[in-house]
Length: 281
Ligand code: SF4
Ligand code: SF4
Image (cartoon, rainbow, N blue to C red; front, side, top):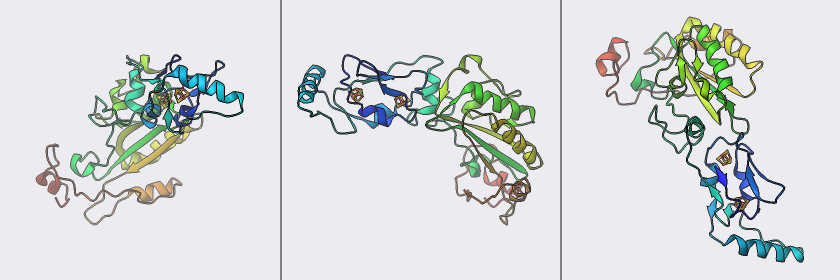
């Protein structure tokens, strides 16, 4: 994102809408964007309304009014002179937007923003079977973001502990080797609002993987959020909660997928595949 110095009048309205605090009023009285902090989420561009007032007229009006201790101030959600300018992004910076702008379809997955459906569609995709645990490790948050070099610290540690990364996940798509969790080097300096690492493991590997995440979290320069899921048997029973409690976590069923999705084209997800696993289609 860029701000046109020719058009900006320094009203500061846009500084409040940036989730990374990347917009500030510089010494010349006009808005600027800290390019390192900006994650190209387009929140400023989408969140503001634009008026098309001539910048010279607005500046002259603001100067005149300031003489008598008054101020011309547009409504708080308005950029009066349409000074915010989206730029054509190139690789590797374009990855910032792919992960941070929820309106952008992620090329690797065909879904928006961070570009993952996680296990929300497990009733159809059958990624997580009985005896499996699905991990969703979310790295970063608005206000702090996360660099891919730090994401790699987590993915390498998880890979070394035997994690199997979800092939359709966008972070996996950025790895040079999913077996080691290494992420393309040209992306290490790119920052995104947040991203989600997904992996699958056997239930008995859960305690070890939790320890890995806790160890990495000690020095992690951003936020780590963790979700673990499993598939119940036909009676709704599962072993995961007991494993998590034994590891010292308070647990509750945050999301329950009732299996009401329509099985279509995923291997093993049709009625016959589900019956084989003892699940009512
Ligand atoms: S809202 Fe527009 S005119 Fe006001 S500071 Fe931001 S870019 Fe400049
Ligand atoms: S694109 Fe997003 S991060 Fe960049 S300045 Fe705008 S709101 Fe802030």
